[in-house]
Length: 100
Image (tube, rainbow, N blue to C red; front, side, top):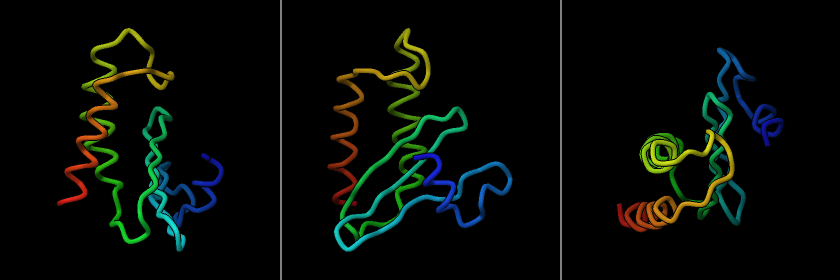
């Protein structure tokens, strides 16, 4: 995924960041966010959905993952995890997103 994102990056990694956020097909839109530590958040939506890069960064990574998983767990960062609170938070976020 990282190689694909770098290939799709319109700025080709300028300033050390990945500027690839999403791509769209006729059937879906694929959203991508990668943290500085290498955690990747991927989401597919309907093709007409707006850019969710900031939602992935603020709502999912910062609020649900950091606050809901890392701060409450002994798991190391970026390791696979199971979290009912994270899962439920994603479902609630998705419901609110649908009507905003």
